[in-house]
Amino acid sequence: MANDPVRESSSTPSLRTEHNAEGSGAVVIHAEQGAFLSGGDGLVQLIGWTFDELERFCATGEITIGSLRELSVFRPDGSLKEGLHGARISLLVWQTDNFDLCGLLDVPHLTGTGNFFASDNDFNVSGNRTESTVGSVHGQVMSDDGQRFRFTQKFHAVILRTGELHKFVLTNELTPIGGD
Image (cartoon, rainbow, N blue to C red):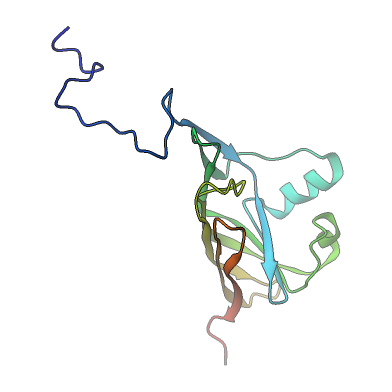
């Protein structure tokens, strides 16, 4: 059919490049995830779960899904692009280097909300392209005694096609808000 928008006309540009094999193209999946644990600089953060959801996970193994949105793009060349984000979601922060998720239940923590994003252009480091991952967490948390803090995490890593780590930056900051 001449008016069929699905059919390509001779004037329609091809979206194929020398890096993409012929075939069905990329597969894109949108999903929901539960929480993201990360840390450094003496701080550990869990974004996406409340403390009650963490307690339930540690007691039952039940994973609460839904606070983070995930985008996965499976490319024809075997590489995987991943994206993860969430806005105004639960944020827990501990002043520790302990990454034992359930071990954190007994460690004093800060509670609040934050925004999160992470993007990884070649999650499984296929070697088909330079790998880069970047992300951040920005939020406000409060201690049990009412002290408020701004929490910021920024990360960026680059791995060259050769496998060489070209760049790695991870910073975590906890800054008091207000005060004396």
